[in-house]
Length: 292
Image (tube, one colour):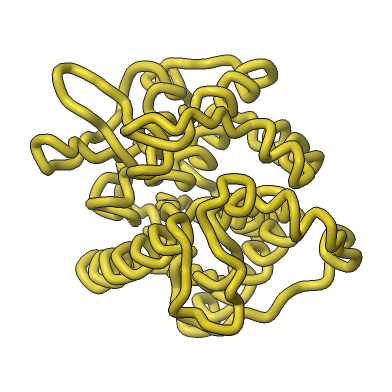
């Protein structure tokens, strides 16, 4: 049987975007062929490494990361425009995934960033794929923005967290959206990495604690620190924008992943997040086939 072609759109979502890897693996395992990818923020990173045919290498690297490794990849700066430079992690990636020009990729790739001065989207469909990913992931006030052509670029999720309107879709391709900001219940999965928890790391190596910007008043959710406040505000905004995009462009398959499944910097939970994505994709594909 001939494989069904799909145009795949991956949402922003910080470390929750790692779930996109499990989604892609499940789509391919069930016979779908991805002909084009588009993404915003973390979605652009997964879309990018997939388009570069290097997702397996990237996945293996993520699976080695411990919480301390994630901290070490954060090049803290405490500058006026952002707490983290955002260069170190991409330099680390380039050691095993060399940069490529978008127009040279076999799979069509599009990334979205936000021109904050002119209040408009910037769509990357040519040039350095790392430049595109870096601009698309520049979370305001957290990562330093990217200065480009007399303007300032920040995270694509500010305006278009689920860029369904930017995918290059061929005739006959199914439109598939992966939304990691879905307002659905979350049930933690049992994996090797989360069966045993290190209380010392939880207390002393949490990124927010390292920055000393978040308090420990867990009993009162109204008492939140700087990063948590930004995270909550961003989740609310992106959730609404993604919901609007889905209603407007009506994807053939929607793969929803709970916005409660992880926080912005939970990359050390890669194993669990990948399995969450795989499970969500399996359910959505089953529902699609049932209703087709």
